[in-house]
Each structure stands twice: as structure tokens, then as C-alpha cells.
Amino acid sequence: MRVMSCLGAAALTAAALALAPPARAQASRFDGNWSVEVVTEKGACDRAYRYAVIVQNGRARYGGPENFNVNGQVQPNGSVSASISRGQDRADVSGRLSGHTGRGTWSTSGGRVCSGFWNAEKRG
Image 1 (cartoon, rainbow, N blue to C red):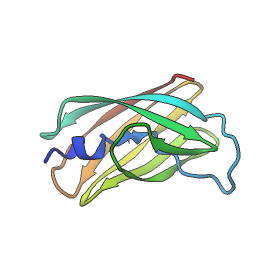
Image 2 (cartoon, helix red, strand yellow):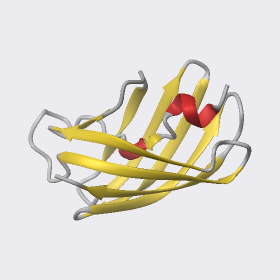
Image 3 (cartoon, one colour):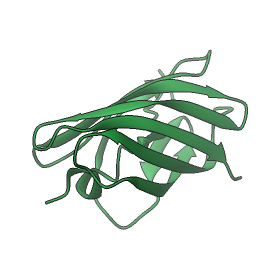
Image 4 (cartoon, rainbow, N blue to C red):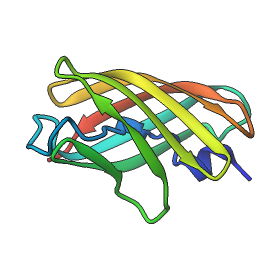
């Protein structure tokens, strides 16, 4: 089983951009549709993915058909810290959003161990 296929690479990248709720649900400047590219630099995970992530009221969800558990947040300064899991596989995501773009790193734990970087672009 490919860890990155299962995790949607941190959809990571979740995520990727896996932004969890702020203290109370309210519109966030990061709300919208994001396209997240996830690239593996180390490990035997697939080389690259691109995922849709939808952020609404400061919460993020994967925009595809798979089921991922997303837990994380974005700070007012754009700092992203999150985790994405599915079964025993987990990816930890960190990075920063700024305006309509973002960049950061990810690494897996659980099954196959991999790591890399992610880039995000706001699409709407």
C-alpha cells in the first residue's frame, strides 16, 4: 500500500494545507479553493501529487473522494501546522501561507517513512 496514495500526501499537504478551526468559526482570509502540489524528496513514496483542498470558515477538507482525518491550524501570521492520517499512516505538515500561495514540508510516520515539500496556490 502506498503511504502517499493513502494519505493524499498530506492532501498535505494536506495539505496539506490542513487548516483546522480557529477558536470560533468565522471567515478566514485563507478561505477558498487551494491546489496543493506534494513532492517526495526522501523515501519510497510516489514522486508527486496534486490535490484539491477546500478551506471554509478556517477549516480545511480534502476536495477529493478519499477519506482522510485532518487536524491542524493556520496562525494569523500564516504559519501552518497540521497532521493528516488514514488508518495507521500519518503525515505531519508544516509551512506558511502568504496571500494566495504557500510552501512547507511534510513527513510520514507509521508505515513507509517519506518526506518532502508542498506548494499551494489559492484558486478561488
